[in-house]
Image 1: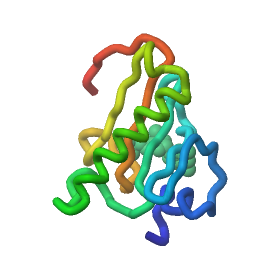
Image 2: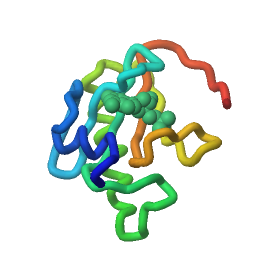
Image 3: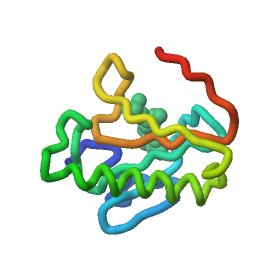
Length: 114
Ligand code: DGP
């Protein structure tokens, strides 16, 4: 998608701190980290949100989670613990309309909602 910021990152048009990439998935550091480790895992294909994922695209979810796990290992939080967050829609605070998994870790976290 032309104007999508994460599509631009995926295409290499915006510089980013890359953590992982393969032919389907890219992971990079969040510019406004909410935890010592804060990495975003995104598919190269533009999908606006979890709500827009088709039945055929469901296997991609497993791959995204697998990459989240690899990122957690790479970042050294696999054993200490990490959180995966997928904000979906306005009430959840989704700002970027390109599905992304937040991988957060590096210290204890509260389970606050909101
Ligand atoms: P969400 O609220 O779930 O849509 O999270 C979007 C995240 O994307 C937010 O934590 C900040 C991050 N972000 C926004 N713009 C950029 C950018 O240009 N580069 C990177 N690396 N992260 C970005």
